[in-house]
Image 1 (cartoon, helix red, strand yellow):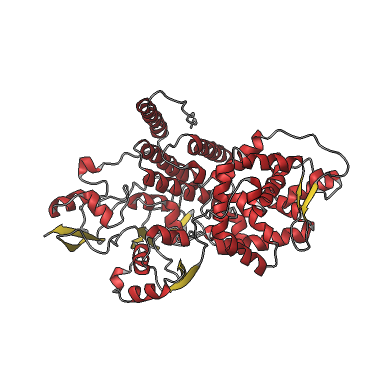
Image 2 (image 1 turned 90 degrees about the vertical axis):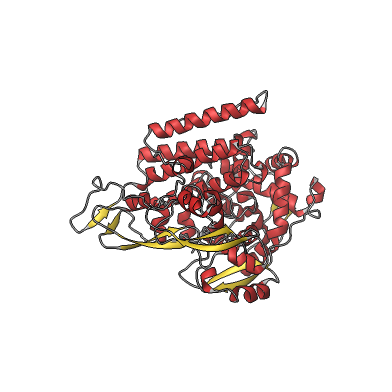
Length: 563
């Protein structure tokens, strides 16, 4: 796929919009030409794109092994198909100025890109296509989308570090003893020093990067105390909080081009090594508490090996192997003399030092931490014994859904996990209100997204089943805890996650009464809406059903009918 070029400045917004629509058309045509877009009927032509009569996908192309196992396809091309379609939808939403839809679609793209870490080694052609898409995606995100506030985006911290690495001019290397000015050097702390390179980054933060750095300082006001308390508990220097700052801007939902996620930017394999789970329900790399404990353990091991914090942090950036190799080549453990390290890593420590020095005395560098309106990240824990809908939880706690998700960034679905009792965070002082309201609700109002059970038949694979129910193959494998994702058993029962079921409002529109409708075979949202005198878009909103999601026989829908 050829990357779309960043459009130049246009004379009028109308001209820009027309060219954006043209680019989207080219983008969609390229996808269709590659066979990666299946035509779907729209709400306008058949009443609803969500049909309960969807038939099983043709199965003759999937081989059956002698032991009765059905072998799935290579999943990476399917993932690439999904993210490309989502990106096309995000571009169209951007043209229509639908910021919330753009944010939702981009978040879904980040989720799927992170899945690629779990597929093992890629085939060369797949890796080439994946890297080409990721480069194009970052370029589009950074320069094309007009509805987003770029300075507070999910890939901004990584992108900013890459930008500054490429724009800063290389400095002449001073052979022999490294020359620098010591700013702070205390026992049990990371020494802070200044040299020409550090000064170069400080100047950048004071000029071009000032607006972005102020956002990072605001987040430091929010998360700084929480992280420092964990670092102290782990016996680690408090200055390590600034490592998370340059990695992610202290954004728990940050995502990088290297498929790293969360405040501490763990890739899937490293996160798993240090106890961070990623399931259908959660991605613990995005949890500020769990990820900080994991990062402290990782950095503790790196410091034990290299016996210097600059080398430990450099290894956090580029890997232990490269640091060992550079030490052997240069016969020194002085970070400033390891000139064979990648340019990004050579800039990583000066970049870190610049951020740390500014944060120690922000007023001296033209910044302020006193004007922040963001409250510190303080919370109460409440235990949820079974999978519960986040909308219901938020309403019971007297907060909005956005606030609840902000306190629990590890949650990937609109519900708490179903496997075990889950400790959920709510704003401090809200636990008593929550328990009083939540316990008063009947169980049928606490339910999370619905599931249906599918029994695997001969000739089926995860791919054909996911196509039948219009769910992600990645989510289907995750919710069923399928480790060998290339094989499923005939007769095996799979849980298929179907979103929706709980209305987002505590009551319906004035003058309306509630009806619970059970979907029958052959139903569509359009037909149901016509029968009850409402609209398919309203039914979607009442039941948290996104566009493109199907309904199925037996599923219960809440309708509000005018009395």
